[in-house]
Amino acid sequence: MACETATEAPLSEMKPPVPSPPATWQGALGRGVVGGLHTTWELAVVMVPVYFLVTLLKYSPFMPWLSRLLRPAMGLFGLPGDAAVPLVGGLLINFYVALGAVAPLGLTPREVTVLGLMLVIAHSLPMEGVVLGKLGARGGRITLLRGLTAAGAGVLARLLPLGQ
Amino acid sequence: MDLVAVLKEGGLGSLRLLGQVLAIVVPLMVALSLLEWGRAFERISARVGASLGRLGLGEHAIFPLLVGALWGVTYGAGALLQAGREGRLRPAELGILGLFLGLCHALIEDTGLFALQGASIWWLLPGRIVVSVVVTAACWRWVVPGRPSTPGDETSRAAPAPPL
Image 1: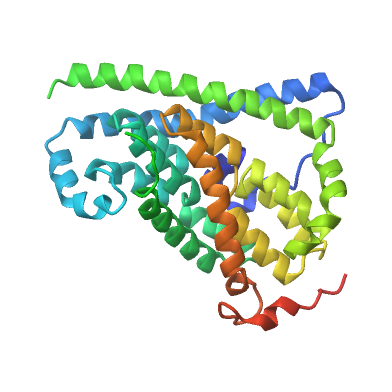
Image 2: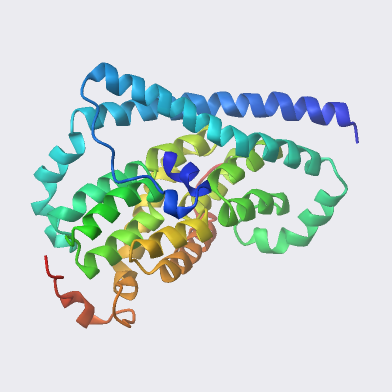
């Protein structure tokens, strides 16, 4: 939620620990709606430009070339070469870049499921790794394990009866 | 390449994506805000805290676990930071929580957003949880901070509690 969007802000401005709970249910409702709209706006700023860029990329001569280039690697997960765009964007930047990039590609439900499984496990790796490190956890090792787990899950997902 | 067609597809597509994000994020923020108002997380952690000791997690680790699983690492980090600052988390707990939450956070939001793109929620959510539990169980000793542990290093199991 605000979690991922807060990743845009420098860590020194990280939100304070859990805010004090709202006093009334009306207050809670209001805070939820305002927070939801605010978060959606922050995501929109990321997703809409990415959506346009990937749509442009999709119709450019660059995409077939990129797709062919990455087909062997993405084939490990049973994914087409184009799926590398949301995968790499999600791994290195954040989940919302991936979301904006996956939407225009027209992947099959099966492909979106495999890609989704990999991306929910591993996304925003540099930023979340730093956050984990700041917490006193071993950010580097955890990040490495997330990457390996996502790759493993992607390979395993080929064996699952996911349909088309 | 027809630029007008690209702009139209990008515009309409990103609007639809934004609508979907709004439909997930606003209700989720409202629900979480209402849960906060009802102090649901405190109640749940008080109730299940003791019984989760078997996982190597003390009762002080349950609140950050719940917040992180639902909200995400950066925001849930607030709860973790607070628990860490108050010296309530042992290194082993920090390793377990950091790794598990690294793999498995913002469950509802991440899953919902990808499900809207056509992914199967029935693979995404259980798949992520199962994979995260297995990897955490197998590798947590390797990510316990403060000591050069290796996978299977039994000594880190007996990490001493920090002074309160």
